[in-house]
Amino acid sequence: HVLILDFGSQVTQLIARRLREAGVYCEIFPFDAGEARIRAFDPKAVILSGGPASLTVETSPRAPQTVFELGVPILGICYGQQAMAAGLGGKVEPSDHQEFGRAFLKIEQPCRLYDGLWQPGERHQVWMSHGDRVEALPAGFRVVATSEGAPFAIFADEARDYYGLMFHPEVVHTPDGAKLLENFVKKVAGCRGDWTMAAFREQAIAAIRRQVGQGRVICGLSGGVDSSVAAVLIHEAIGEQLTCIFVDHGLLRQGEREEVERLFRGHYNIPLVARDASDLFLGKLAGVDDPEAKRKIIGATFIDVFEEEAAKVGGADFLAQGTLYPDVIESVSFAGGPSVTIKSHHNVGGLPERMRMQLVEPLRELFKDEVRALGRELGLPETLVGRHPFPGPGLAIRIPGPVTPEACAILRKADAIYLEEIRKAGLYDAIWQAFAVLLPVKTVGVMGDARTYDHVLALRAVTSTDGMTADSYPFDHSFLSMVATRIVNEVRGVNRVVYDVTSKPPGTIEWE
Ligand code: XMP
Image (tube, rainbow, N blue to C red):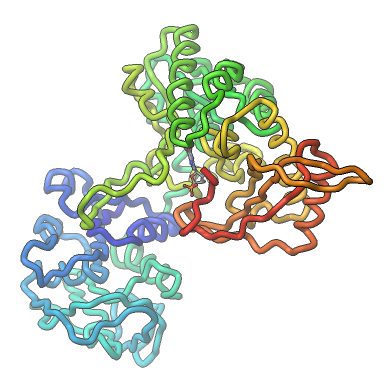
């Protein structure tokens, strides 16, 4: 496996994704993880990521000397390349020629790093992003590729297998970047590339058995991909020692609870407690219109109900959670100051602390797309594995203003029609998330010869890769008007439909 030391670049996770796509397991540590942790990880190669700092500043982060003592190949990317040069006795200076964005690399000499990929004399597009530059190379290095603004675009010490790149190979704007990274970990570092989902499944099952022994595990199911995959994996490892708990807060979409029951009880035969707590949740939400207050109420009530059900099951020592790798990576931040909370995204946070149980988190090394691949490996249906994200507070944050059972019922129907049509048109997989929002606004309409005075419904659909930024999905106008007609005709309580074309930022995906 490979160690990626993070210096705070926005795209460090992409390095990890590229390596894993090549079948090589890797982990990201912060640059100051410390000698003991780095040695214990025993990497076959080290990658030093990019970062926003400047090595010309005294206090900027440095590459730990440990990595140069491991005797393994090292690849430095942008800031990481400068940190490597500085750590080995080279000189980094501010540059008057900054280079950002697309640039062309000229390959000057053959090099093990791109053996079989690039030849001397060729030009290749890369994505540059640097201000400073290495002025004097450390002993043992030579320049093997240049670009207009970067005479040291790639430098190499093949005796030690140390390589420095002034560009980002991990982004798609460097078309050969993924292959270059694959070359580094496989040809240079000798990694085999046998980290597949089938292999992961076997390892994870063994690890769960080792951790749990004869103990009993409780797993909260949400109906989403992560908790479902975690539950099926754990069930495969320990069978009836697992009990799943599904809390229906009354804010689910149409048919969701039935689907979970059918799949887990019916298909997988996993012990499942499904508790209908909708009256409790809707009662507590009555009259509450502030989005963060809704989230807090739902989060706290969820914990209460979950605890109650867990106590009824009794005797569980472990709590399973579908925690993913992006939640686990310790972020390196130089921005200083606390970041602003836009939404609290409060779900079941606090459960583990409250319940004083040990955690079983079999997905904590995986990215979302890897969880999906594991779900397929486990035979979960495509409709579940490819599911759009659905927020923990559910429909409550898709009904601006106070949530009522009537509003939930209207929204559920409209949302189901919208999603049905998206699926029928074959668009579901091209969209990150699609849903309807029931507005607390009434407008006048006419149906037949009669006047109507009913709610406005907003439709939202976005494309995104991680939910952090998003674009509104460009439906054909005819598709939208067809959906609008169906909704107004079939859903009593809605007489007008609008489409939200706001991107994120400045909008957010959900309306609350
Ligand atoms: P926003 O609305 O912040 O959403 O652009 C980004 C992603 O997060 C989801 N989301 C939530 N998920 N609890 C959740 O589990 C929440 O309170 C919550 N709020 C938003 C949203 O659906 C989108 O996928």
